[in-house]
Image (cartoon, rainbow, N blue to C red):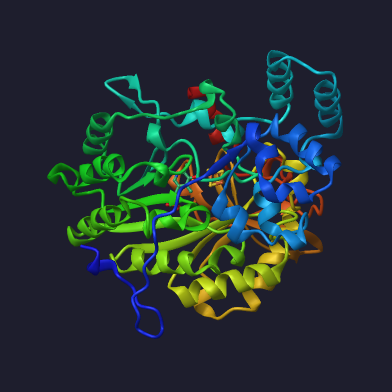
Length: 454
Ligand SMILES: *Cc1c(COP(=O)(O)O)cnc(C)c1O
Ligand code: SF4
């Protein structure tokens, strides 16, 4: 079995990797990370303050192989994984800093943390209320069915990640707010729901990161699709950042080969298997083990598609995206989505105005060949759907932003161009106003009606 997914180095010597221990640090062990001792005490205190409010989790691979510690705090992977002072609004920062200096009880810290989190829009885009599917009129937690063709499934064992991204829109579920967690281990409910919904062609396993699961758990969910009554579910996508944060998952972990065998089994049974890989920066693609992981996955017949948000301080630069896409094409990865950062968490720190986002997207596109131009965006995953900024132009003397739905809660909204007043400051769909003196966008009345129905 090992042979099947073996990859060779350029000089035809088989590359083998010894299993590595997965060592992770969270807020409580922040002070124990050896390399942090190099940083000034004041900076370490700032990190503690923020890590008490926002999620923090990082592993030794990220620390030792992805971050350039000579370039901290500017290093993009450091900004991607380590807390920074400005991620909290100044007043929130001050309150937590003052409390921590006063020798507080854990209970006091927790209470303030919970209060401060409420100001950070923990659940954007009506995710909880609007998209929960029903079976025999019972709600199915851990599933979402927003767009006709695609069902999202959140396996309960996959609700963490190998490290946490500081900008993550799912941050609320990582800081222990169980109410905000939608997760399930109901394989049979999933199977029954899919069997009853023949319009569903795609199943998307997501999290957290489903790749934190042991292969034997993941395989249980995946093999459901091989049942004859689910033949209409042609595609299974797995959303993951393991290729960046823990490529060992596909190479040297105990059950890595078994995982690849399951993926190959699905492919061999006619399914389209796609790993939806989250890459923010080309630096995540440079280590030998990251590249070995990509090759091993591709050897199973699984496609790798990439997606990521544009985030300030990390990748708000066309050069970074151009190199990311060029490297992906070289490695056989297909760029898929270029997202606008969601309106949640440390958004004020990471947000990039929509106009600027479009300029970065366009400048990056100009620098790559056609195969590198497949990422759609800049795309906002908003309540009514995924809305893309197509461009900025002038129509009859009015400067406008041209928009369209890539995905809509009503499939009929998709691909219709619509127009917003040009706004250099807007960072999200609900900041935009219709152009040409119209009162509202074409979909708004219908969307309101959908919300009222629940
Ligand atoms: C993006 C997304 C999907 C997948 O949409 P595709 O256009 O098929 O990539 C499905 N469900 C939700 C909630 C999404 O945000
Ligand atoms: S890997 Fe994805 S789900 Fe996990 S923290 Fe990063 S953005 Fe969030």
